[in-house]
Image 1 (cartoon, one colour):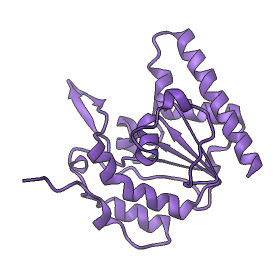
Image 2 (cartoon, rainbow, N blue to C red):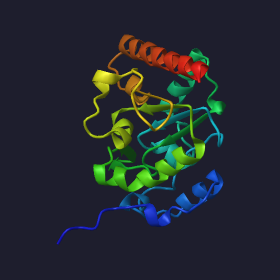
Image 3 (cartoon, one colour):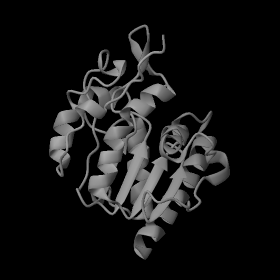
Image 4 (cartoon, rainbow, N blue to C red):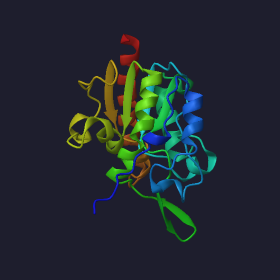
Length: 211
């Protein structure tokens, strides 16, 4: 017997309000990830933000705080945005998956990449965020986020930083997730990745100026 696919659609309200969407998401049971997570971590930012940034899923700090990109990767994102001349408060920042998926290792909770079925289940929330915010520039942070809406054939290694032909927003691009900076093996490698990430966001700033 074929299993019923996970799907958040029954929990998504018909609304023009991000606040109502966020409140509804707090009760989402569209896939099993809600059970071990502390809470839903929904997107944050202005309703008509010119820039929307989409990551993979919340991490440990985000799960506990209930806010997006507030952990170490969030600090890397904030730093790169500042260097690129983009105010984070002008951006709408969210994730494809709204619950933290993890494996327990002793007392630590370690990030576990969501499966395609879990990503697909959560997509109705992201599609509604896109519909309501209608950004001028859409930036995918990492391959998981990009493949969720651009398809499994998308290759970040081939298209990083490029402006993509896509009807999701007037300008669409993809770069690494800021957590990639933290995963580098030494200080020099981290700085090189930090500089490359900043250059990608400087290109985003140029797109915003053209919008």
